[in-house]
Image (cartoon, rainbow, N blue to C red; front, side, top):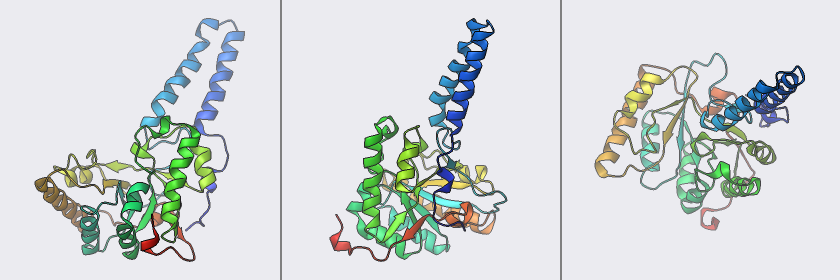
Length: 282
């Protein structure tokens, strides 16, 4: 496994910066050879690319993004977003333990501060924890760089009180922007999204969740699931059954479930010398 560095995000030009440079060169060339009436086309196409790029979380247009395992990966990784929650996290942990599977929890900082016992339980059971922003603001990428930095850093601070330093960040809804790159560099974080999901709308749409994942999953996939309580008791029971079905199928019939750090060949987090006691957390 590679050391806990941020070499993927060293300050090379991003695809967006390279594309923008090429678009400007083409526009200038077309203008000077007299085709001024179509010189605007490369710039227009570049603008469309920048507007569309945030909604394709598997592709790193503005910054490097890891959305799949390394080349040749035969397994898959389980990731859970939006927790922890007292009514859902214990269910997830129980099922993972039943099948002896390891997952990575991309947690919300505010929830982690409110439920330190759940973060401690996740870590005690050998799972990974990563940064998923402070409040899961779906418009976070429209905020200023200062707001981005405060949001991500605040979550890092809370999680570091458990004796860990997360090395991965998953933006809300997988959306990125050009300002995010430097913020993550300063925090020592890499962007990890996903390559397989059930479009469950945060466990609001859990019918046939397992089947939807199993129909899409391929070797090397990072699977996106949610550590969020479904809205009704019936839905909650259905969700638990769907996770049970999914875990059983992955373990017995399809692809081996690997820790995310194994799949991407990069650590999810590092441990510090000591963390604070639970009763000293915010």
